[in-house]
Length: 415
Image (tube, rainbow, N blue to C red):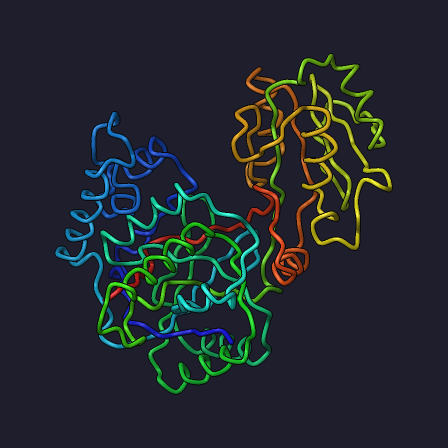
């Protein structure tokens, strides 16, 4: 059963919360982070992307980058920009985008739950990315950023959260520059904390929605600390890591699309002819065309949009992986026609989160950077949970969750 633990969070004062809270480390590169934090000494990017305070030529994995993170973290605490709560608490973190609000419970998940499969994942992780975040957690002795979890919705939990939110003012309440609202409450009442954690204890599994590398890194550092502590009791803070848990019925997955640099030596006509083997292809004109249902794709090629409907036999609705549109596209287009075998390493393909819109696909093709773009119908939460429950792994770059969590509203110390 899933563990949810209250903890003494490290948080910013109200007056600087909006300035301190930042986008996650992995959704912007160093140049973007440097621009975003310019003129804002409070931004958490100084800790989670510390290379922005070093010369641009410095390798982002150089020792001085991690050392800079420690220095900046210490500065934030010394200046009172991050202050630890005096008592163990749970927190509510709500986000509002396009008029819809989702409510997450912030608490610590258990390292053992991750290692034992109570926390289920649906993506593979890359060792180099794991090691980068492990170094960051180790050297700061803290989970600076939460991971994004989901769980099967529980009516009693919804009622508790709804009641608490209705009766209490948020600690933080602001709209970020991207238009997303962020609302944050602190639950100090030991009785409410006890009820919530006991209800969580009845939940058989939780699911990594976003942040697989951060989850793996946090769990592996906790495991290391356990193995290196001869006096380990199991109650140490390093046995837990920071997570925001959202009910599955409140989350929305948006599309995650693909752009490819060339047609693998084929002419446009040859490429379209090969597509006809597995898809019913129809020209849609110059206006952006978005897929409207499962197994339908849209393609942008040489200034025109096409719909592509997968033919029977190209997918298996009884197979958790075989039913996915990313599987259909990967097998019958990217692999068989375009010769892209390894989505993780092939430099001819790139991925575009649906939050950027299909206009971004058109832009990258029209610029000449890419030759063809494919838009997919989004994966559902039901599909994600089914894949995780059956022990399967989604193809790379399948899910894109929005809105992203802001980092810095609360930090978890490992001692």
